Length: 441
Image 1 (cartoon, helix red, strand yellow):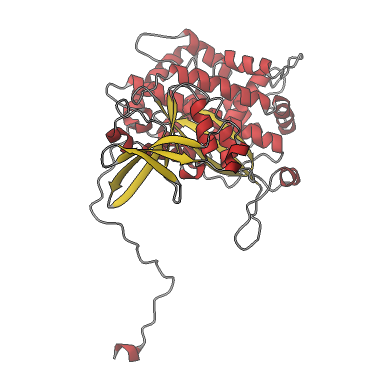
Image 2: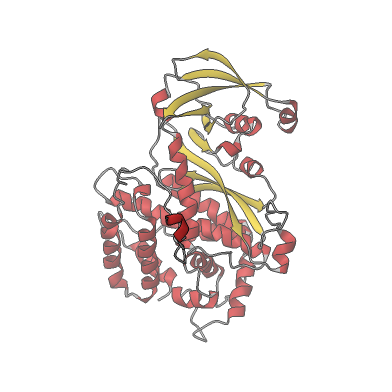
């Protein structure tokens, strides 16, 4: 039984109080993505384009397996004829699938999953985070032509071509809402501009201080309805205090320069923002935000809000360390296939994260998806995916029950408070240190 057939059986099975995997990767959205990008074939082939989508997903999960082995493990091939497929056929069909269809599928699925997730709100706003990450590519001739390398302080280039990526994430569930990537030489703020159109209304986006650009922040705020931002105060930022509100907050005017107004024609000369200050562990922390309504957005809530931006950093770690196993580079040696692989990684990450959202609905208690173990959920989902094609239809409902009953074991215990201050331990030496007798005397 093929994986698609097993998922069809899951679609038909929906008993009370048992969530199903019917939207694990909805076939309707796969077909819609292929139609949008006109990626269709008239001939009936052993490796359909729908199965190639599952292959790209499998590449993100089984990062150490060759493509032909992933096809056989997931049983996504039409078994009419020879039982196995040639590796060259897998590569050719993956090239037919292309990059555009995977990008379209990511956008369709993220929209569907974020709508179904019922995210919690902070004072009526969805919490989002934006940050960047870098991916290494194999050192092939094609990748060397398409992508540049990082230049060290010594002037030497890094060993591998690199892609720079900027992602937008819903922070309570870790579901990605948008992504943009390009050559390593492209600035992160340029990539962040591409996310403005996909940013939802009634949201608050947390930025790292490296994204400080009045043009970017003004465009982010003015493009939609109630699209707020929050960013740490960058050292040397010029501002004028308009009025003070208590001892730890004030309304300020940020001054733009002529160069910024030339790059952003709609940027005014001054931009009003709110400056919030708080002392944390003896260190003064200041953040700027577009939320100037003091009554609607209390200062006590804003001061502790920025720490949640770290969730997107954890999301990047989950992708690189847990899904890809700290793989040094991506596996694709062609630029278009590398971009397809990246969209597949983001799609697979969202697919796992959405199942974790559904797991929290199964739990009795006030849990958020980021309180579950990603590594544990990944292991259970991989086991389910591998087992479905080889299970009888009658056994699938039982597998689903056990899948969700394991959710309680994935809850992460709260981190214990540190009892001792941080110290730097002495680096272990390979050889013992020789003690001079004259010094001892």
